Every structure is written in structure tokens, then in C-alpha cells.
Image 1: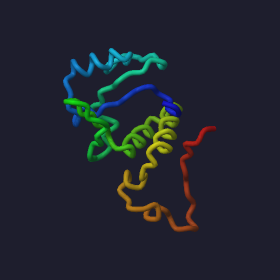
Image 2: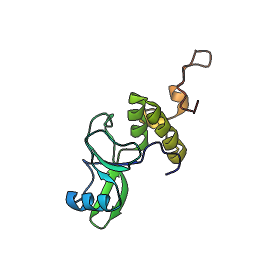
Image 3: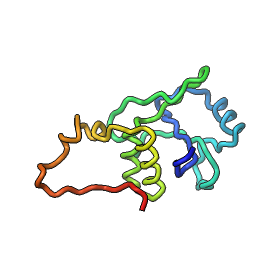
Image 4: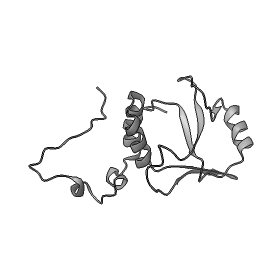
Length: 136
């Protein structure tokens, strides 16, 4: 997919409903590695089953990606994916953040529990710090 820095599909395992063997067979049939646990070839696409961990930043409602027959696939909300990628902040992760923001236009304020950008800003005369995720 244009703009992506990685060729993976993350599936939120706790909420997804699938037959593991059927999903593995389907993924491998189209050339995806299935749930690799070792070092990856950066040019080879893969399907990863994601467990709670760094991507579990607080409570959230999983988002349905797709339902195909008996297969139901979910992911964490985009805001949580962005927050998890900010924790690592590797160049690849920052590229993924740029892609996620441009594709989904997330409400970053909802990820931090605020209702609007105004509610998280300091007074106008206070110094501000920003994190740039634009390309250098």
C-alpha cells in the first residue's frame, strides 16, 4: 500500500474470531508469512497476530477490520496504534504514523482522554513543545 513503510497486517488477537489453520492457509496461499516470531525480511509481507502488550495502552474498543464468512478480524483504534509506535519511535514507526494520520485522520485528543485540542493546550503565552513526524 502506497505510503506504508511496512508490509504487514496486524490482527488484534483478543477480539478476532478465526480458525487458526484456515487463516494460516489463506495467508500463506497469497504469499504472506503467518504470525512470524523471528527476525523478518523487511521486503516480505506478513500477517501478525497481536497480543496485549505495548499496543494495549489503556482500555479501548477493538475496531472491526473485516468479516469474511466465519472470519472476523479486529485491530486496536488508530490512536492506540499511533501511541504504541511513538513509544518505539524508530524511523519506520514514524513513517507508519505519517501514513496512519494521512489515511485515517485520527482524533489524537481522544487517545489522551481530552475532548478537544484546546483542552490540552497551555495558555497562549506558555512555551510549547511539539513532536514532528514529518519527513526530514
